[in-house]
Length: 338
Ligand code: NDP
Image 1 (cartoon, helix red, strand yellow):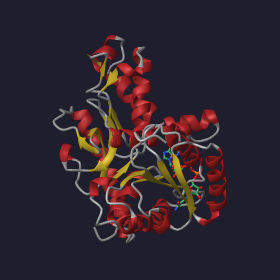
Image 2: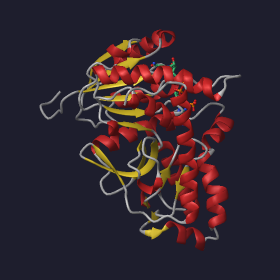
Image 3: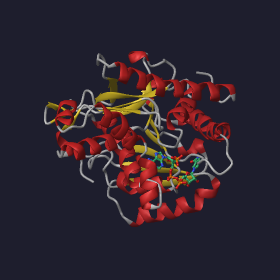
């Protein structure tokens, strides 16, 4: 390693033996998340049932002889897993299985994310940043944050970057333009079917996306009935075509969420689910997706955007779902002291 290398970063990945964990770890190790000048110390956290498979993943990581990897540790103890962590990707969660009620799912995940929140509170480094991928991601992030009162609230975020990428991809397809010409797409609300992918501030090569789409005969009807449902239901579409859930694209989104948070977006926007500051009528006390810009390791919500009645209603509907989820986990006693 040369003297130009940065200080090593400790990255904890939960659900490390799962599909998204497996698709993420090798790219993190290769430097695609934090850059080719940042060594990483990898912590693979699993539940006991996943421990052996995580050890197998660690063997493969070692066999890659990645120059950036300083250490690889596997554990099923959250306190050990988050010890000194600078970044945490909370990917592992309890999937909904047959016969499971919504409350059962929230409760099972509440158990996981409250324990992890406490361990992060007690053991992680002072600069810890948390990105929750495991669903229901926004509410899982809220549960973890509520159990970590000593960690600044804004360090808890959830993934809506895959929804953001899906929206960019659909806009590129509809306008026949390369993705790198697209700016200003935003995902609002919950990472669920109620999310609002918003093109009203988007541009394609500097021109209003909505004007371009309208010229092509793709008006409000296309936005409401084709685009939004395409983005919101893309996960199910991938399952039906691929025969398995979206894994590589979810892993990519998780990496880019952290990449941009740490290394910056420049002038561009991205979308992240972050604790609401009350703007746009989004209730404070929930973790909801907003357009953000990141600089120097800090994200800031893009303020001052004008919304049509249609956009306002869509955002309010998704926010209402998040408020309900919060009430449900609160009534199950899953929220912590924050
Ligand atoms: P995956 O790796 O495929 O998915 C992990 C989580 O990511 C799921 O909750 C999934 O939610 C969520 N997710 C978020 N966005 C997407 C997306 N776009 N597409 C698909 N999934 C998405 O699950 P596996 O079952 O393969 O692996 C989970 C692993 O987590 C297991 O190894 C298990 O042992 C582990 N685990 C670890 C825990 C811990 O470290 N404490 C706790 C619980 C589990 P959904 O499927 O609902 O959409």
